[in-house]
Amino acid sequence: MDVTARQNVAVLGATGSIGKATCEVLRHLGAPYRAIGLTAHRDLATLSELAELLSPEELVISGGTPHLTQNTTNERSSADTALTGSGRWRVREGAEALVELASSPNVDTVVAAIVGSAGMASTLAAVEHGKRVALANKESMVVAGPIMLQAAAKSGAQILPVDSEHSAIFQAMQAGGVDEVERIILTASGGPFLRKPLNELPHVSVEEACRHPTWQMGRKITIDSATMMNKALEVIEARWLFQMPAEKIHVMVHPQSIIHSMVEFKDGSVLAQLSPPDMKLPIQYALTFPKRLESPTLRMDWTKRLQLELEPVDFERFPALQLGFEVAKAGGTAGAVLNASNEAAIDLFLSGKIRFVDIATVCREILNQHHYESSPTIERLCELDRWARQEVMKWT
Image 1 (cartoon, rainbow, N blue to C red):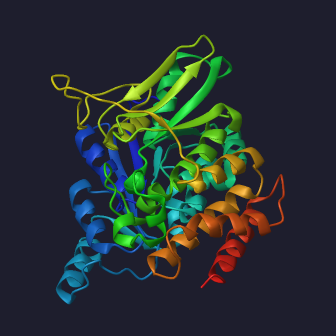
Image 2: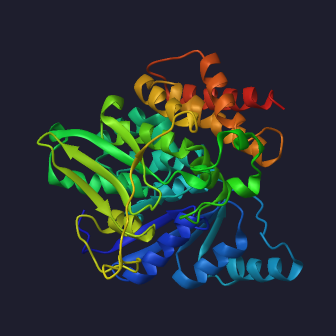
């Protein structure tokens, strides 16, 4: 892809934290990068604001009938008018419209930033149609990594990671070939409960679990960080994205979130990518690769004392991470079941129906119950996704 030519970008999940950061990056970059399409699930107000800023050609509301996060009559009327009354952009609704935008011949790059398995169909459509896919939807690789890679090989699509950890690995791996890598080391902040006594974990509240010490993210992702299920999913994603066996993937706790990940090569060299915790950097790198351009991201302050800590993971504290390594090794249907179980279990925790420590327990139980298949179709993965969610509901 010629990154100096005009780049039409579709931002899927534009109203989430990654989507909004992507819109900031696009405003900063300016020509030749243009937001041609923006999508939201139901957050009409934020979508309206972003459309005013970026003037896309198309908006997609994937969740059907939209609603506002601030649900007053005046706000609804104002947003409705902005979205549908101006005639400056086409407005469409539904999951099918989302897939059509992702595969549109007018789109060069798709930023896949829809959280959870809900983003898989549109991500796969973008890959099948040969787009550059800036991948923030890790669940696509977790659930259907081999299918995504096969589609990319057939279509010529580029899949570039947006997760800060995988972007760091991708950047470090530019220094050598895959066959020269000894191991990759994902770093984890440890979330809000890194130092909390183990006997207090069964009693933590939703508010405590959603209070991340270094990153500002959505509730689902923040709880994943607290359980370290996010790192479990990242292990699985790394296994497919970098075609690296699970045995060559390691995790270290790094509370400062400055070292985003590392690659150790066979000669003993370890390359790390460092920067302040700011998602705009990996987003921009995925958009402009192989170029590096001036960015709006936070910078390191080299005039101040800097202390960086690295420590092994306590698997007793974070049992969810062990599931990630097991699923990365197993492949097949295991990723779909783990991902669906986790999403459903988080919903139960958020609604007060299970405890924080039950999330990993529920996931292991459902994973152990399912009938494993080594080479499932996408249809079978979707069936197991629905099955796992139904099984989790039985815990209420």
